[in-house]
Each structure stands twice: as structure tokens, then as C-alpha cells.
Length: 326
Image: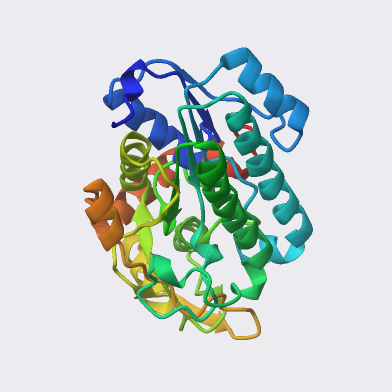
């Protein structure tokens, strides 16, 4: 039977972050009024005692686990141990106490960093175990994938109902624009806006620009998560994406155009490109959830650029990887 979120008490870890904000809005459109968002100042989810207290005090029916410690290529290279520990510890404690408290549903948001470095494109969920992830973000990706294995074991041994989702790279309003921890789209938007406004003659970008990526607007991802919470009872991995692949070089040129930057774009091939290609097959999401992305890429970019220009004075250094208990 589908899970009725309108009558459930839902805990959203990471609910104060980038994806969390969109997810809370989507939950409310589905009639969910009983929602709690744990904050790190009160509940450090890497500590089992805090997780136990969260379940005891708030007695959730459904947990949507978004909280993570995450960043771009540079941040992953600088923090491999921390990223593995923090993400593994949060999932380990939250899932175990979901079992103890006989949770109605646990939804884990994973990462496409879990896919092997040379996964055939488009990525299909069946390929998750056919190789080692891209080295720069492997600790983070493997920690997230281990949570899927744990959920599968708990489903088979204890009957814990769950869902496991693999969103492609997200972007949109309220993203993280901090230059040291942001992902590619917010980093490029900030760089292009600042270069355009300063009249810079050129702008430098990492790598060769040959790698490809796929991007999903954050509101579309939130809708997919809610659909999975309602409909899925087992952690069959499900991709959430648009099936549209774009090279980093073409992405930079498009964002530069939308930000009115007309200077030279210089590439630094001494810096890593990351995984060579990323593009998802999202047919399983459509088959199991009846979900597909709705927001076009250029429209989503315009909305994100407009939001950044309007809010950068007080949000430019916002880092959702440290928000909402993550």
C-alpha cells in the first residue's frame, strides 16, 4: 500500500539545506504538515547517541535522509577520510535506529559518485557494482553505496521498508555558491557573474572541459524523492535524471552567455576533470514511480542565475553540506 505522507510524521535530515528546502515545499504540496528538521547544533547525526535521542524525542513514521558532508573535486581530495566517516556514520546510525523504532519508511538519497569511473553511458542501475568509482570522490560515493547495501539487508532480515535514490548533479536556487565547496554549476555562475561585472578579460576553469555531466533542477529531484517515499518499499536503486548530457566546455560557454560574460575562457589541464562522463538512464524512475523531470536546462539555469544575483549579498557563503544535521 502507498505510504500516506499527509498522516505521517516525517523527519527530513538535511532539510535546511539546498535540496531540503525544495523537498519541504514538495511535502507540503502533498498535504504533509507534521515535519521535523534536525539541526546539527542539536543533533549531530554522526553520533549514535544523538540519533537515538532524535528518534526517541520525535517518533517519526518516515525518515528522508538527505544530510551529507560533500563538496566538489577539490573538497573531496582534501577530505576523503572525513567524507567517508561522516556519511557512513550518519546512515549507519539512522538505519539501525529505524529498525529499533520500527519505522514505517526510510528513504536514502545516494549519489552518482557511487557509479564506477568507466560506467557505460547512459548509467543504468545494473552497472553500480561493475567497477571502482572515480578516485577523487570514491570515499564519499562508497559510503553512500554502503547505505544501500545496509537497507537491502535490513529489508530482507527485519522487513524495514525503504527506498534508495541516485540523483544526478543538482542545481537551482539556494544552491551552495561558496568557492571552496560548491559544485560545478554554482561555482561557474558565481565566477561568470563576478567576471562579467568586473570587466575581466578572461576566466580560468579547471581541466580540459572534455568531461560531460548531466544536471537536474532541484524541484524535479524533490518531486522524485516524495514519489519514492509514497510508493517504494524496497531499496532498488533508482536514478533521478534528465537523460541530457553536456560537456563542461559547452556548459561554461552557456553559463557565460547567460551571465553576459564575453571574455576569454582559459582551461588549466593540470587540474583534474573528474569522471569522464555522466549521464543517467532514468527509465526505471518512470516505470516504478511515474516520474520524469519537467524543468528545461536553460530555464533552470536562468532561474538559478537570477536567484544568485538577487541573494548573493547574504547567501554567497552558505554551505548546505554543514546544514540540517549533515
